[in-house]
Length: 193
View (cartoon, rainbow, N blue to C red):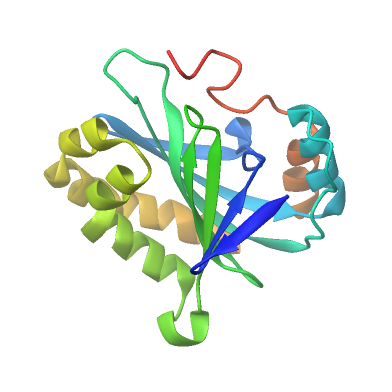
């Protein structure tokens, strides 16, 4: 299911998609940042493997927390897809470089003892390193179009939504939304166009 290389876990299955109905969306120039509170467990992981047609084992997982999803167009006019995801989870905080075009999903684990609160860290990475991280995810053209002034202006509202999600969520509704079998955002619409 995965390969581990120099701190990066490379999966041969795409990440479990965000639940659009449970996400707050922030358009910022050519990108859009979604804020979502997520619960992940073995049942949700198993449902995702079925949706993806994956024949391997579903990962053993039981975690929760705020996710920040960064969407954009690979090329102007293409269907927006997710390139970065910051999973600020309680047990295993990490972030993903996602490429639907290359069918890659690389996860980098965070050492919270060294980095502190993963949500604070993620918001700071979005503020200070987003173009570089988008380029690393294979979205070089998009990285060059990021509007850093608009991003700086939007970050207080994004942070407010993220902390609201962290402290004010309905676990039952979040779990039901995840189990609803949402089609991966961008995948069904031909994201590689």
